Length: 207
Image (cartoon, rainbow, N blue to C red; front, side, top):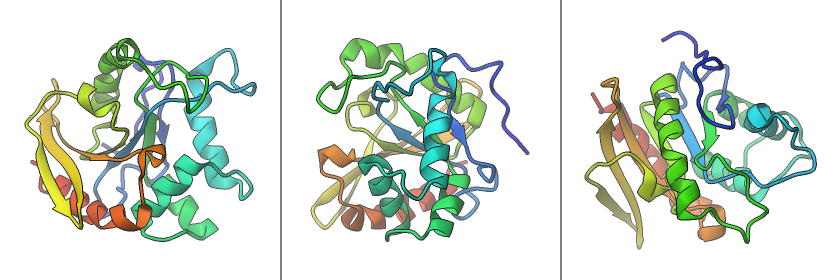
């Protein structure tokens, strides 16, 4: 897999961000997909929403004045510290990113309902088949129950619990998925960063 082109095959509302170094891997050469929960409605969102995720991540990655709580917390969790501009660009260039829910919400006080989450399951699996990540880091407790089925295992550290499991896609490709908290649900980058290395090691051992 040398590059990822999925525009003609994608079935969801928002095309995922695919960093130019995604295939080379985030850490230890492991292809990693970060999953958020949902987009919020914005006056800047075009009628054709397909490019919105990509525009959002590109703006965050390349613009020093563009800051959101979610992306700040996620990147500090992944790296273990607040990154420099160069580190931020390298990080997001090495990842793929998507939001699980394919319907925009009005804001933080408007979480997705069960119908929206279930309606997003098929496009999520299709995206996994097209991207073929080894490691999926899910920063959404609401989305986690709607992931592909599998037997979960708990990893405990300092009073925190990270749930994870392995599953195979219809294509046969195997994935390891890990549940992190959403920033509004209490994600502490300092406390959760040690789980990242464990997650990558476990994903790297998936065959």
